[in-house]
Length: 64
Picture 1 (cartoon, rainbow, N blue to C red):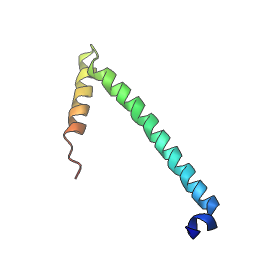
Picture 2: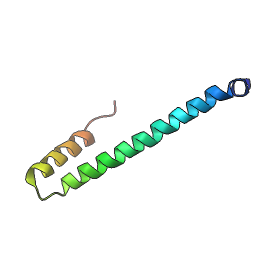
Picture 3: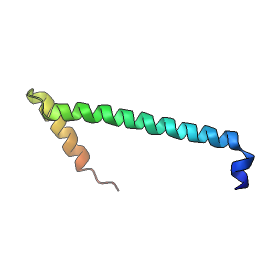
Picture 4: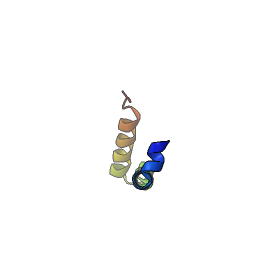
């Protein structure tokens, strides 16, 4: 616990950086998901194909 109280400015900077990365990543994921989702239901065949290939590629990629 001494580390937290000894370096509060460093902890606040780390929390700030973490929150910025968290919200930036969420915003990017939201935009990417909306674009790919719109492509999947698009009446344009090439857009639908690209969206489907992207989703199937990401879905079938193993985590390890």
